[in-house]
Each structure stands twice: as structure tokens, then as C-alpha cells.
Length: 157
Image (cartoon, rainbow, N blue to C red; front, side, top):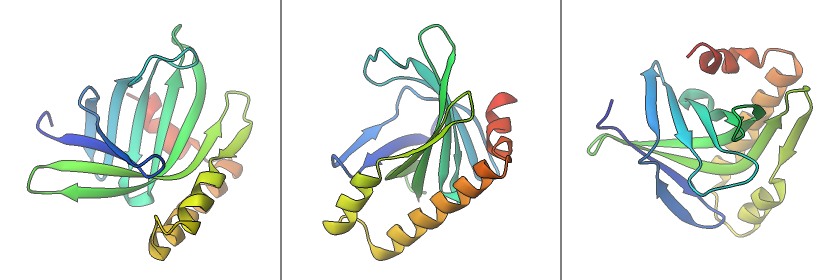
């Protein structure tokens, strides 16, 4: 697993970052789990564990503060591009994010960026449709009380 390269592509701003310091914990059956520290120092968060559910178009991250306390579960809607030649995965951040707080409060964020990407033709119609379907499926799972089907992968590491 050490020879796998991971990248995060953001559309707003347009940037691709190699996740060279992420440590791959597991990669099996289309699920990739990594441990990581923040790329740039922050006051609110320090590190986390992420599970990429490639087939579902979702990345679920357990985010910790500097004291190791859970801040929230941060869910990114993603598109995964696998380059077999160089054994790399690029995770395109499709801008829609869902935060689940320890008290169960759910917040959907960055819909304005998603709208900007749509208006400016940054995302294709098929990518927009997939992002909305993945976000809808995730929210239905969260609201039905079955979010643990994602979080258990991280909790059991």
C-alpha cells in the first residue's frame, strides 16, 4: 500500500494537492482508510481519520481537535479517479459537504460553491447529477439513523 499516491482536487479554488503525509491504514473492497494531520495549522481541528467509500462517492472523516476530542464527522461528496499507470487515486471534491456533530446536529455546507461551479460550467451535468444523488443518499442514511454503516469502519480501526 505504500506505493499508492493520493491526491485531493478542489474545484474552488482550482488546486490539486498530493496527500503525501496521509498514512493508509486499510484498502479493501473499494474502501480506503487513512490517518492524517491537517495540511495547514488550524485552531479548530488537528487531525483525523478518513474513510473513502469509492463506490458511494462519499468520504467520511472523523475530525479531532488538538486534545483528541471529536469535533464532528465531516462528509465530502467525491468523485474518484484511479490512474492505474502510476497507482494513484485523485479524489475530486464535489463541493457539497455534510457535517454531523457529536450531539446529532446535521449541517449541509458549501452549497453556494456548488451552485457557483454549476453556473460557471466547472462541473459537467453528469458530475452534478452524481454529486446530488450521492448527497441525497448520504442524508437519507444519516436521517434514518444508519450513519454507523459508514462510521463503524473508522471506529473499528
